[in-house]
Length: 125
Image 1 (cartoon, one colour):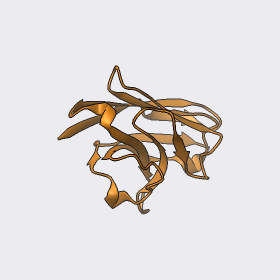
Image 2 (spheres, rainbow, N blue to C red):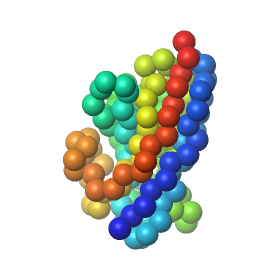
Image 3 (cartoon, one colour):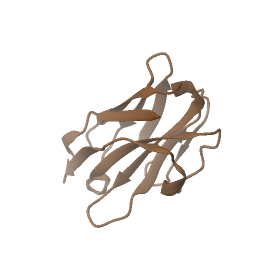
Image 4 (tube, one colour):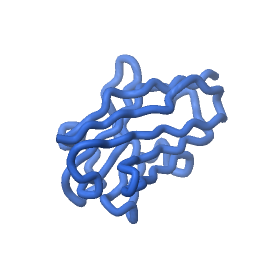
């Protein structure tokens, strides 16, 4: 079992930045690909970014490419999402997720094994 806890959400003006963190406990963190998803009110949960077990490979949704950066620290069992140039449409609850395996282009929600409780990000226009 893997437990994931997100932090770092909040209210920010459009054009601003936020850094989300996800702390993991339980099974060996470095065995898991990690990802960030988000869910806006009335919408389905969607893929944002993912990173492979070593941190050498990353993958992004087109909507955040060039603005968001995912990174991980296996020594601290943590994955971060640096969000820059935030837009109103980035407003959502952001979830950290983990999956066993090497593939990071898996954007389908049901194929990820573990989830955090989410952290709210609100971007004011």
